Image (cartoon, rainbow over all chains, first blue to last red; front, side, top):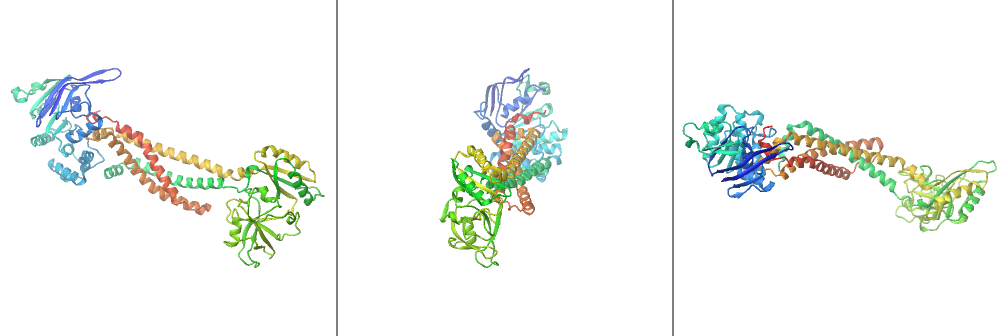
Length: 236
Length: 402
């Protein structure tokens, strides 16, 4: 489904050149739940940005569902983000002036769904995350966990085949984090491919596979099951 | 369309939106009325005089000597002026068109003095006045030389009169005016022997008599102060003016030449206030629209900077650059629409006050509509730059934590 080969990403300023990804290759199969781990500055978020078509690579090849998406124009990338990819952000990224319903509606409007279809999708996804009763609440009236569930509802409302989650529990306490992970696991069971970027080895352990990134390169692609009794050692 | 969510977002962040909406409203109220006043003044300034203004020179003579002979002076001056090479025609006159000073009578279409009066601005002229002013004889005939009375014995209406076309309609409606008589308050009358093309009278903007309700009397007048209309060949006015002044000053007769001026002098003087008003209001319109545009740019720029993360998130969720630009244009359009609705009400309130205070005509809806459309277009133009900046925000901003 996701196939990156020899991806390079370099950030340049007047003074500094930072090689965020170097010869970065990874493949994610349809239906997988993959955790991407690594220390701060290792390139996890850059990988996520390129995977989610938020940024373009400086070199290498990126195929999504067999399509070469690394060189697409801005509008085409926006279209793919909207139709095939769902995003879950660490800071939830809800729009504070919009209520829960309208927040979930944001990507659906760009998709061009008719009102009735949008409403059905919003209600269904909020039902799934357990917030159907809070449709007219503003984000500020919800807890952090509830806000992240709204963000998940927004990510899945358009039925994407691919969910990218960037530290989705980073701002939550452990109980809420577990609830969110349960929710993501359930979404994955229903067939959505999930790539989860996290610092947390506990969360990474719940994925089918762990991709460890260090200095812009993949250092470990083994599934946890293959690492025996001490999976955390691989991601430390 | 995202109207409902944009509206609800605007309502949750009222202050900036309210201020810009109010700015649009006040600007509309001011510029709609200003445009109307500017258009009215320009129409007044540009209204044709009906006479050969570029080639007309006026001169004023005032007798001061005890032996001053008005009839003889008049006759001598007319002959002198006609003899100057380049002069096309000359007439004596009591009034300068559009100078703001003149004479008016109440005429009647019947001998009954109780009949409804017909106000007319009368000009006392001699037989050559049609050529001298550059008018056209539309019907009937001109005054004959023998019909001119240099110094009338009394204030009665002269036996023959010439009217402008407008005055003929004012006095007699659709009926032909030629051969009819106009009466004064004492029952004395004159026969209408000619109709000439319209010209502006002594006062512009009068309602009674109307600015083109003119009656010509073939008289030389009573007083010692008198004026001449001297029409010269095209392009000769400035050359001949000092020559005419010198000739009149040198002709004696125990009188002084008070002034010799081109007709344009009075147009400049008469319309000075109108021109200043046009300049002032145009400056006001430009300043207000500029301030409004800056307000819109300022608010939109602030909103873009404050919402970078939101915009990045929208981009990440699938918004194209054009969707973001459209979002800000729509937001501005809604603000502008609210502003122009309130502004239209304010414009009519201001117009009502101007009508009551200054007898101005009521503001035509076209001006409000045109001003509203202009402000909405200005808003869209003003918001375009910050909106395009918003559209250029990188979707990767959504994943940045700082």
